[in-house]
Length: 501
Image (cartoon, rainbow, N blue to C red; front, top):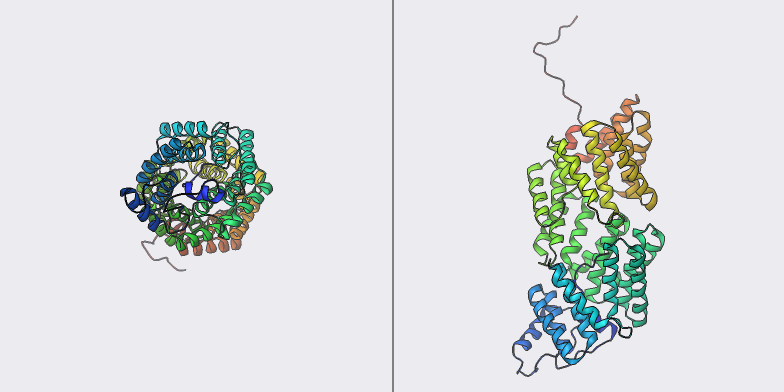
Protein backbone atom coordinates (compact mmCIF):
# COMPACT_ATOMS: atom_id res chain seq x y z
CA UNK A 1 0.00 0.00 0.00
CA UNK A 2 2.77 2.45 0.93
CA UNK A 3 1.98 5.28 3.34
CA UNK A 4 2.11 8.68 1.63
CA UNK A 5 2.38 12.06 3.29
CA UNK A 6 2.67 12.41 7.04
CA UNK A 7 0.44 11.42 9.95
CA UNK A 8 0.56 13.91 12.79
CA UNK A 9 0.75 12.79 16.38
CA UNK A 10 -1.48 15.64 17.53
CA UNK A 11 -4.29 14.84 15.10
CA UNK A 12 -4.23 11.09 15.72
CA UNK A 13 -3.88 11.28 19.48
CA UNK A 14 -6.58 13.92 19.69
CA UNK A 15 -8.84 11.83 17.48
CA UNK A 16 -8.54 8.67 19.56
CA UNK A 17 -8.63 10.46 22.87
CA UNK A 18 -5.49 8.66 24.06
CA UNK A 19 -3.74 11.68 25.54
CA UNK A 20 -4.76 15.27 26.21
CA UNK A 21 -2.07 17.87 25.69
CA UNK A 22 -1.29 19.71 28.91
CA UNK A 23 0.09 23.13 29.75
CA UNK A 24 -1.10 26.59 28.81
CA UNK A 25 -0.87 25.89 25.08
CA UNK A 26 -2.83 22.65 25.08
CA UNK A 27 -3.62 20.49 22.06
CA UNK A 28 -3.37 21.92 18.58
CA UNK A 29 -6.14 20.41 16.48
CA UNK A 30 -7.32 23.32 14.36
CA UNK A 31 -6.40 24.14 10.80
CA UNK A 32 -4.38 27.34 11.38
CA UNK A 33 -1.06 25.53 11.54
CA UNK A 34 0.94 28.66 10.76
CA UNK A 35 -0.38 30.42 13.83
CA UNK A 36 0.02 27.26 15.90
CA UNK A 37 3.65 26.94 14.81
CA UNK A 38 4.39 30.58 15.60
CA UNK A 39 2.96 30.30 19.10
CA UNK A 40 4.57 26.95 19.93
CA UNK A 41 7.92 27.93 18.44
CA UNK A 42 7.98 31.14 20.47
CA UNK A 43 7.14 29.24 23.65
CA UNK A 44 9.87 26.70 22.90
CA UNK A 45 12.46 29.45 22.47
CA UNK A 46 11.47 31.12 25.77
CA UNK A 47 10.75 28.31 28.25
CA UNK A 48 10.87 30.74 31.16
CA UNK A 49 8.12 32.86 29.66
CA UNK A 50 4.49 33.02 30.78
CA UNK A 51 3.60 29.78 28.98
CA UNK A 52 6.32 27.82 30.71
CA UNK A 53 8.34 24.91 29.22
CA UNK A 54 6.70 22.71 26.60
CA UNK A 55 5.33 19.36 27.77
CA UNK A 56 5.84 16.22 25.63
CA UNK A 57 2.40 16.58 24.00
CA UNK A 58 3.16 20.22 23.22
CA UNK A 59 6.36 19.09 21.48
CA UNK A 60 4.23 16.66 19.46
CA UNK A 61 2.07 19.61 18.45
CA UNK A 62 5.12 21.72 17.56
CA UNK A 63 6.51 18.89 15.39
CA UNK A 64 3.14 18.57 13.61
CA UNK A 65 2.78 22.30 13.04
CA UNK A 66 6.38 22.57 11.78
CA UNK A 67 5.74 19.87 9.19
CA UNK A 68 2.37 21.36 8.24
CA UNK A 69 4.14 24.69 7.73
CA UNK A 70 6.75 23.12 5.41
CA UNK A 71 9.61 22.94 7.93
CA UNK A 72 10.52 19.26 7.58
CA UNK A 73 13.98 19.37 9.19
CA UNK A 74 12.71 21.28 12.20
CA UNK A 75 9.79 18.90 12.52
CA UNK A 76 12.19 15.95 12.74
CA UNK A 77 14.41 17.59 15.34
CA UNK A 78 11.42 18.48 17.52
CA UNK A 79 9.98 14.97 17.13
CA UNK A 80 13.26 13.54 18.43
CA UNK A 81 12.89 15.70 21.52
CA UNK A 82 9.25 14.69 21.91
CA UNK A 83 10.20 11.02 21.82
CA UNK A 84 12.82 11.51 24.52
CA UNK A 85 10.33 13.45 26.64
CA UNK A 86 7.71 10.69 26.37
CA UNK A 87 10.31 8.07 27.34
CA UNK A 88 11.39 10.17 30.34
CA UNK A 89 7.77 10.30 31.54
CA UNK A 90 7.23 6.57 30.98
CA UNK A 91 4.57 7.25 28.35
CA UNK A 92 5.14 4.22 26.10
CA UNK A 93 2.17 5.00 23.86
CA UNK A 94 3.34 8.55 23.16
CA UNK A 95 6.91 7.32 22.69
CA UNK A 96 5.77 4.55 20.35
CA UNK A 97 3.78 6.86 18.10
CA UNK A 98 6.57 9.44 17.99
CA UNK A 99 9.05 6.68 17.08
CA UNK A 100 6.77 5.39 14.32
CA UNK A 101 6.44 8.91 12.95
CA UNK A 102 10.24 9.25 12.87
CA UNK A 103 10.51 5.88 11.10
CA UNK A 104 8.09 7.09 8.45
CA UNK A 105 9.72 10.49 7.98
CA UNK A 106 13.26 9.11 7.71
CA UNK A 107 11.97 6.66 5.11
CA UNK A 108 10.51 9.52 3.09
CA UNK A 109 13.81 11.40 3.36
CA UNK A 110 15.70 8.47 1.83
CA UNK A 111 17.41 7.29 5.03
CA UNK A 112 16.37 3.62 5.29
CA UNK A 113 18.79 2.65 8.05
CA UNK A 114 17.50 5.39 10.36
CA UNK A 115 13.93 4.51 9.39
CA UNK A 116 14.46 0.85 10.28
CA UNK A 117 15.98 1.80 13.62
CA UNK A 118 13.01 3.94 14.57
CA UNK A 119 10.53 1.26 13.53
CA UNK A 120 12.38 -1.14 15.87
CA UNK A 121 11.99 1.42 18.68
CA UNK A 122 8.30 1.85 17.92
CA UNK A 123 7.82 -1.92 18.18
CA UNK A 124 9.79 -1.98 21.44
CA UNK A 125 7.46 0.64 22.91
CA UNK A 126 4.15 -0.78 21.61
CA UNK A 127 4.38 -4.54 21.00
CA UNK A 128 3.37 -6.79 23.86
CA UNK A 129 1.36 -4.01 25.46
CA UNK A 130 -2.42 -4.00 25.89
CA UNK A 131 -4.26 -3.17 22.68
CA UNK A 132 -4.15 0.53 21.91
CA UNK A 133 -4.87 2.80 18.92
CA UNK A 134 -1.19 3.55 18.33
CA UNK A 135 -0.64 -0.10 17.38
CA UNK A 136 -2.63 0.61 14.20
CA UNK A 137 0.52 2.23 12.82
CA UNK A 138 2.61 -0.86 13.47
CA UNK A 139 -0.03 -2.76 11.48
CA UNK A 140 0.44 -0.27 8.61
CA UNK A 141 4.15 -1.04 8.62
CA UNK A 142 3.38 -4.77 8.74
CA UNK A 143 1.26 -4.37 5.61
CA UNK A 144 4.12 -2.66 3.78
CA UNK A 145 6.60 -5.34 4.89
CA UNK A 146 4.32 -8.19 3.84
CA UNK A 147 3.81 -6.62 0.42
CA UNK A 148 7.55 -6.16 0.00
CA UNK A 149 7.95 -9.90 0.66
CA UNK A 150 5.08 -10.79 -1.71
CA UNK A 151 2.98 -12.25 1.10
CA UNK A 152 -0.60 -11.12 0.39
CA UNK A 153 -2.08 -13.28 3.15
CA UNK A 154 0.11 -11.65 5.79
CA UNK A 155 -0.67 -8.19 4.40
CA UNK A 156 -4.41 -8.83 4.57
CA UNK A 157 -4.07 -10.23 8.09
CA UNK A 158 -2.27 -7.06 9.20
CA UNK A 159 -4.95 -4.88 7.60
CA UNK A 160 -7.69 -6.74 9.43
CA UNK A 161 -5.77 -6.49 12.70
CA UNK A 162 -5.56 -2.76 12.12
CA UNK A 163 -9.30 -2.62 11.49
CA UNK A 164 -10.04 -4.42 14.79
CA UNK A 165 -7.83 -2.00 16.72
CA UNK A 166 -9.37 0.99 14.96
CA UNK A 167 -12.91 -0.19 15.66
CA UNK A 168 -12.13 -0.59 19.36
CA UNK A 169 -10.59 2.88 19.51
CA UNK A 170 -13.73 4.59 18.26
CA UNK A 171 -11.57 6.84 16.08
CA UNK A 172 -13.19 7.79 12.74
CA UNK A 173 -9.71 8.64 11.43
CA UNK A 174 -8.18 5.26 12.22
CA UNK A 175 -11.28 3.41 11.04
CA UNK A 176 -11.15 5.16 7.66
CA UNK A 177 -7.42 4.43 7.33
CA UNK A 178 -7.96 0.75 8.11
CA UNK A 179 -10.78 0.47 5.58
CA UNK A 180 -8.63 2.07 2.91
CA UNK A 181 -5.74 -0.28 3.68
CA UNK A 182 -7.88 -3.41 3.43
CA UNK A 183 -9.74 -2.15 0.36
CA UNK A 184 -6.50 -1.43 -1.49
CA UNK A 185 -5.20 -4.93 -0.73
CA UNK A 186 -8.40 -6.57 -1.93
CA UNK A 187 -8.18 -4.60 -5.18
CA UNK A 188 -4.65 -5.86 -5.79
CA UNK A 189 -5.94 -9.43 -5.37
CA UNK A 190 -8.67 -8.89 -7.96
CA UNK A 191 -11.53 -8.76 -5.44
CA UNK A 192 -12.88 -5.59 -6.98
CA UNK A 193 -16.38 -5.38 -5.51
CA UNK A 194 -15.20 -5.92 -1.92
CA UNK A 195 -12.23 -3.61 -2.34
CA UNK A 196 -14.24 -0.76 -3.83
CA UNK A 197 -16.91 -1.07 -1.14
CA UNK A 198 -14.28 -0.58 1.57
CA UNK A 199 -12.62 2.23 -0.36
CA UNK A 200 -15.95 4.02 -0.73
CA UNK A 201 -16.63 3.56 2.99
CA UNK A 202 -13.23 5.09 3.80
CA UNK A 203 -13.69 8.06 1.49
CA UNK A 204 -17.22 8.96 2.55
CA UNK A 205 -16.18 10.80 5.75
CA UNK A 206 -13.22 12.31 3.90
CA UNK A 207 -15.32 14.02 1.23
CA UNK A 208 -17.85 15.10 3.89
CA UNK A 209 -15.10 16.85 5.87
CA UNK A 210 -15.51 14.69 8.98
CA UNK A 211 -11.86 13.75 9.58
CA UNK A 212 -8.79 15.58 10.85
CA UNK A 213 -6.67 17.53 8.39
CA UNK A 214 -3.72 15.10 8.45
CA UNK A 215 -5.93 12.06 7.90
CA UNK A 216 -7.94 13.81 5.19
CA UNK A 217 -4.81 14.61 3.21
CA UNK A 218 -3.35 11.17 3.74
CA UNK A 219 -6.51 9.40 2.63
CA UNK A 220 -6.89 11.52 -0.49
CA UNK A 221 -3.33 10.59 -1.46
CA UNK A 222 -3.74 6.91 -0.62
CA UNK A 223 -7.10 6.55 -2.34
CA UNK A 224 -5.93 8.32 -5.48
CA UNK A 225 -2.79 6.17 -5.56
CA UNK A 226 -5.02 3.11 -5.26
CA UNK A 227 -7.39 4.29 -8.01
CA UNK A 228 -4.47 5.06 -10.29
CA UNK A 229 -2.82 1.71 -9.74
CA UNK A 230 -6.08 -0.19 -10.16
CA UNK A 231 -7.18 1.88 -13.22
CA UNK A 232 -10.38 3.01 -11.45
CA UNK A 233 -10.66 6.12 -13.59
CA UNK A 234 -14.18 7.22 -12.60
CA UNK A 235 -13.36 7.39 -8.90
CA UNK A 236 -10.03 9.01 -9.65
CA UNK A 237 -11.79 11.85 -11.48
CA UNK A 238 -14.34 12.39 -8.71
CA UNK A 239 -11.95 12.22 -5.77
CA UNK A 240 -9.26 14.27 -7.48
CA UNK A 241 -11.70 17.13 -7.93
CA UNK A 242 -12.74 16.85 -4.28
CA UNK A 243 -9.09 16.77 -3.18
CA UNK A 244 -8.24 19.89 -5.16
CA UNK A 245 -11.24 21.72 -3.70
CA UNK A 246 -10.03 20.80 -0.21
CA UNK A 247 -6.45 21.82 -0.97
CA UNK A 248 -7.57 25.16 -2.37
CA UNK A 249 -9.72 25.91 0.67
CA UNK A 250 -7.05 24.74 3.12
CA UNK A 251 -3.46 25.26 1.87
CA UNK A 252 -1.41 22.34 3.12
CA UNK A 253 1.59 20.11 2.40
CA UNK A 254 -0.61 17.51 0.69
CA UNK A 255 -1.35 19.93 -2.14
CA UNK A 256 1.53 18.81 -4.38
CA UNK A 257 0.58 15.12 -4.17
CA UNK A 258 -3.11 15.86 -4.79
CA UNK A 259 -2.21 18.17 -7.66
CA UNK A 260 -0.12 15.41 -9.24
CA UNK A 261 -3.19 13.18 -9.38
CA UNK A 262 -5.08 16.09 -10.89
CA UNK A 263 -2.39 16.31 -13.58
CA UNK A 264 -2.89 12.64 -14.44
CA UNK A 265 -6.65 13.11 -14.75
CA UNK A 266 -6.33 16.28 -16.85
CA UNK A 267 -3.86 14.48 -19.12
CA UNK A 268 -6.25 11.62 -19.81
CA UNK A 269 -9.20 13.99 -20.29
CA UNK A 270 -7.21 15.95 -22.90
CA UNK A 271 -6.75 19.24 -21.03
CA UNK A 272 -3.04 19.26 -21.80
CA UNK A 273 -2.24 22.95 -21.34
CA UNK A 274 -3.72 22.95 -17.86
CA UNK A 275 -2.09 19.61 -17.04
CA UNK A 276 1.37 20.94 -17.90
CA UNK A 277 0.78 24.11 -15.88
CA UNK A 278 -0.37 22.06 -12.88
CA UNK A 279 2.61 19.70 -13.18
CA UNK A 280 5.03 22.60 -12.99
CA UNK A 281 3.24 23.83 -9.85
CA UNK A 282 3.75 20.40 -8.28
CA UNK A 283 7.52 20.83 -8.56
CA UNK A 284 7.26 24.22 -6.82
CA UNK A 285 5.04 23.00 -3.99
CA UNK A 286 6.56 19.62 -3.16
CA UNK A 287 8.28 19.19 0.20
CA UNK A 288 11.82 17.88 0.52
CA UNK A 289 10.55 14.54 1.88
CA UNK A 290 8.46 13.84 -1.23
CA UNK A 291 10.90 13.81 -4.13
CA UNK A 292 8.98 10.93 -5.71
CA UNK A 293 6.12 13.38 -6.28
CA UNK A 294 8.47 15.79 -8.05
CA UNK A 295 9.83 12.89 -10.13
CA UNK A 296 6.33 11.87 -11.19
CA UNK A 297 5.48 15.46 -12.12
CA UNK A 298 8.60 15.73 -14.31
CA UNK A 299 7.64 12.48 -16.02
CA UNK A 300 4.10 13.75 -16.60
CA UNK A 301 5.47 16.89 -18.26
CA UNK A 302 7.66 14.71 -20.46
CA UNK A 303 4.63 12.70 -21.57
CA UNK A 304 2.78 15.85 -22.59
CA UNK A 305 5.79 17.21 -24.45
CA UNK A 306 6.39 13.94 -26.29
CA UNK A 307 2.85 13.72 -27.60
CA UNK A 308 3.07 17.30 -28.82
CA UNK A 309 6.30 16.60 -30.73
CA UNK A 310 8.51 18.61 -28.35
CA UNK A 311 11.02 15.78 -28.29
CA UNK A 312 14.10 17.60 -26.95
CA UNK A 313 12.07 19.05 -24.09
CA UNK A 314 10.57 15.63 -23.37
CA UNK A 315 14.05 14.09 -23.20
CA UNK A 316 15.08 16.68 -20.60
CA UNK A 317 11.93 16.08 -18.55
CA UNK A 318 12.47 12.31 -18.56
CA UNK A 319 16.09 12.88 -17.51
CA UNK A 320 14.92 15.00 -14.54
CA UNK A 321 12.44 12.31 -13.54
CA UNK A 322 15.18 9.68 -13.69
CA UNK A 323 17.54 11.84 -11.62
CA UNK A 324 14.82 12.09 -8.95
CA UNK A 325 14.40 8.32 -8.83
CA UNK A 326 11.62 7.50 -11.30
CA UNK A 327 12.14 5.00 -14.11
CA UNK A 328 10.90 7.09 -17.10
CA UNK A 329 9.08 4.27 -18.85
CA UNK A 330 7.16 3.72 -21.03
CA UNK A 331 7.57 7.36 -22.08
CA UNK A 332 11.29 7.09 -22.82
CA UNK A 333 10.81 4.05 -25.07
CA UNK A 334 8.08 5.85 -27.02
CA UNK A 335 10.35 8.89 -27.27
CA UNK A 336 13.04 6.70 -28.82
CA UNK A 337 10.44 5.46 -31.29
CA UNK A 338 9.52 9.04 -32.22
CA UNK A 339 13.21 9.87 -32.63
CA UNK A 340 13.67 7.03 -35.10
CA UNK A 341 15.65 4.96 -32.60
CA UNK A 342 13.18 2.10 -32.25
CA UNK A 343 15.87 -0.53 -31.71
CA UNK A 344 16.75 1.12 -28.37
CA UNK A 345 13.17 0.97 -27.08
CA UNK A 346 12.27 -2.68 -26.27
CA UNK A 347 15.11 -3.30 -23.79
CA UNK A 348 14.06 -0.42 -21.53
CA UNK A 349 10.46 -1.60 -21.45
CA UNK A 350 11.46 -5.18 -20.69
CA UNK A 351 13.69 -4.01 -17.85
CA UNK A 352 10.90 -1.88 -16.40
CA UNK A 353 8.50 -4.83 -16.54
CA UNK A 354 11.03 -7.17 -14.93
CA UNK A 355 11.77 -4.67 -12.15
CA UNK A 356 8.17 -4.34 -11.00
CA UNK A 357 8.28 -5.65 -7.44
CA UNK A 358 4.51 -6.07 -7.17
CA UNK A 359 2.72 -6.06 -10.56
CA UNK A 360 -0.63 -6.59 -8.84
CA UNK A 361 -0.28 -3.29 -6.97
CA UNK A 362 0.37 -1.12 -10.06
CA UNK A 363 -1.86 -2.73 -12.67
CA UNK A 364 -2.27 0.42 -14.75
CA UNK A 365 1.48 1.02 -14.81
CA UNK A 366 2.09 -2.53 -16.02
CA UNK A 367 -0.66 -2.24 -18.62
CA UNK A 368 0.93 0.91 -20.01
CA UNK A 369 4.29 -0.82 -20.27
CA UNK A 370 2.71 -3.76 -22.08
CA UNK A 371 0.80 -1.52 -24.49
CA UNK A 372 3.98 0.40 -25.30
CA UNK A 373 5.85 -2.89 -25.81
CA UNK A 374 3.28 -3.93 -28.41
CA UNK A 375 3.64 -0.59 -30.21
CA UNK A 376 7.44 -0.78 -30.19
CA UNK A 377 7.60 -4.39 -31.40
CA UNK A 378 5.21 -3.61 -34.23
CA UNK A 379 7.40 -0.68 -35.25
CA UNK A 380 10.61 -2.71 -35.05
CA UNK A 381 9.64 -5.99 -36.68
CA UNK A 382 5.91 -6.30 -37.12
CA UNK A 383 3.67 -8.90 -35.41
CA UNK A 384 5.65 -11.56 -33.60
CA UNK A 385 5.75 -13.78 -30.55
CA UNK A 386 6.91 -11.00 -28.20
CA UNK A 387 4.10 -8.67 -29.24
CA UNK A 388 1.55 -11.48 -28.96
CA UNK A 389 2.72 -12.33 -25.43
CA UNK A 390 2.35 -8.70 -24.37
CA UNK A 391 -1.17 -8.50 -25.80
CA UNK A 392 -2.22 -11.74 -24.12
CA UNK A 393 -0.99 -10.52 -20.72
CA UNK A 394 -2.77 -7.21 -21.24
CA UNK A 395 -6.01 -9.05 -22.10
CA UNK A 396 -5.63 -11.23 -19.01
CA UNK A 397 -5.20 -8.15 -16.82
CA UNK A 398 -8.30 -6.55 -18.32
CA UNK A 399 -10.35 -9.72 -17.92
CA UNK A 400 -9.27 -10.27 -14.31
CA UNK A 401 -9.96 -6.68 -13.23
CA UNK A 402 -13.11 -5.90 -15.20
CA UNK A 403 -12.12 -2.23 -15.54
CA UNK A 404 -13.09 -0.24 -18.69
CA UNK A 405 -9.72 1.56 -18.88
CA UNK A 406 -7.82 -1.74 -19.05
CA UNK A 407 -10.37 -3.19 -21.47
CA UNK A 408 -9.85 -0.22 -23.79
CA UNK A 409 -6.07 -0.68 -23.69
CA UNK A 410 -6.38 -4.40 -24.41
CA UNK A 411 -8.80 -3.88 -27.30
CA UNK A 412 -6.54 -1.29 -28.93
CA UNK A 413 -3.47 -3.49 -28.56
CA UNK A 414 -5.27 -6.54 -29.97
CA UNK A 415 -6.52 -4.52 -32.92
CA UNK A 416 -3.05 -3.11 -33.60
CA UNK A 417 -1.61 -6.61 -33.66
CA UNK A 418 -4.35 -8.12 -35.84
CA UNK A 419 -4.43 -8.14 -39.61
CA UNK A 420 -7.17 -7.17 -42.07
CA UNK A 421 -10.76 -7.93 -41.16
CA UNK A 422 -9.79 -9.34 -37.74
CA UNK A 423 -8.55 -5.91 -36.62
CA UNK A 424 -11.83 -4.05 -37.16
CA UNK A 425 -13.90 -5.49 -34.29
CA UNK A 426 -11.38 -4.96 -31.44
CA UNK A 427 -10.52 -1.48 -32.72
CA UNK A 428 -14.18 -0.47 -32.96
CA UNK A 429 -14.63 -1.75 -29.40
CA UNK A 430 -11.56 0.19 -28.32
CA UNK A 431 -12.89 3.43 -29.81
CA UNK A 432 -16.21 2.95 -28.02
CA UNK A 433 -14.52 2.29 -24.68
CA UNK A 434 -12.14 5.26 -24.95
CA UNK A 435 -14.99 7.58 -25.91
CA UNK A 436 -17.06 6.30 -22.99
CA UNK A 437 -14.17 7.12 -20.67
CA UNK A 438 -13.77 10.56 -22.33
CA UNK A 439 -10.09 9.96 -23.12
CA UNK A 440 -9.72 11.78 -26.46
CA UNK A 441 -6.07 11.14 -27.34
CA UNK A 442 -6.34 7.36 -27.03
CA UNK A 443 -9.68 7.38 -28.84
CA UNK A 444 -8.10 9.27 -31.73
CA UNK A 445 -5.04 7.02 -31.77
CA UNK A 446 -7.30 3.97 -31.97
CA UNK A 447 -9.29 5.63 -34.78
CA UNK A 448 -6.07 5.95 -36.79
CA UNK A 449 -5.53 2.20 -36.48
CA UNK A 450 -9.17 1.60 -37.32
CA UNK A 451 -8.89 3.74 -40.46
CA UNK A 452 -6.06 1.51 -41.72
CA UNK A 453 -8.08 -1.63 -40.93
CA UNK A 454 -11.19 -0.26 -42.71
CA UNK A 455 -9.10 0.67 -45.73
CA UNK A 456 -7.53 -2.80 -45.83
CA UNK A 457 -11.03 -4.28 -45.72
CA UNK A 458 -12.09 -2.14 -48.70
CA UNK A 459 -14.38 0.30 -46.83
CA UNK A 460 -12.74 3.54 -47.90
CA UNK A 461 -15.65 5.69 -46.68
CA UNK A 462 -15.41 4.30 -43.13
CA UNK A 463 -11.64 4.77 -43.26
CA UNK A 464 -12.07 8.40 -44.30
CA UNK A 465 -14.53 9.10 -41.46
CA UNK A 466 -12.23 7.52 -38.84
CA UNK A 467 -9.20 9.43 -40.10
CA UNK A 468 -11.05 12.76 -40.20
CA UNK A 469 -12.31 12.29 -36.63
CA UNK A 470 -8.80 11.40 -35.44
CA UNK A 471 -7.30 14.43 -37.19
CA UNK A 472 -9.83 16.78 -35.60
CA UNK A 473 -9.02 15.46 -32.11
CA UNK A 474 -5.25 15.56 -32.58
CA UNK A 475 -5.36 19.12 -33.89
CA UNK A 476 -7.55 20.20 -30.96
CA UNK A 477 -5.15 18.61 -28.46
CA UNK A 478 -2.03 19.96 -30.12
CA UNK A 479 -0.73 16.45 -30.85
CA UNK A 480 1.08 17.71 -33.93
CA UNK A 481 2.99 14.53 -34.94
CA UNK A 482 -0.17 12.42 -34.87
CA UNK A 483 -2.17 15.10 -36.68
CA UNK A 484 0.38 15.14 -39.51
CA UNK A 485 0.09 11.40 -39.96
CA UNK A 486 -3.66 11.69 -40.56
CA UNK A 487 -3.16 13.84 -43.66
CA UNK A 488 -2.90 12.03 -46.99
CA UNK A 489 0.57 12.27 -48.54
CA UNK A 490 0.97 15.12 -50.95
CA UNK A 491 1.54 14.19 -54.56
CA UNK A 492 4.95 15.25 -55.84
CA UNK A 493 4.90 18.33 -58.02
CA UNK A 494 5.15 17.59 -61.75
CA UNK A 495 8.06 19.14 -63.63
CA UNK A 496 5.80 19.57 -66.71
CA UNK A 497 2.07 20.14 -66.84
CA UNK A 498 0.17 17.01 -67.87
CA UNK A 499 -0.74 16.80 -71.48
CA UNK A 500 -4.33 16.57 -72.43
CA UNK A 501 -5.70 14.46 -75.15
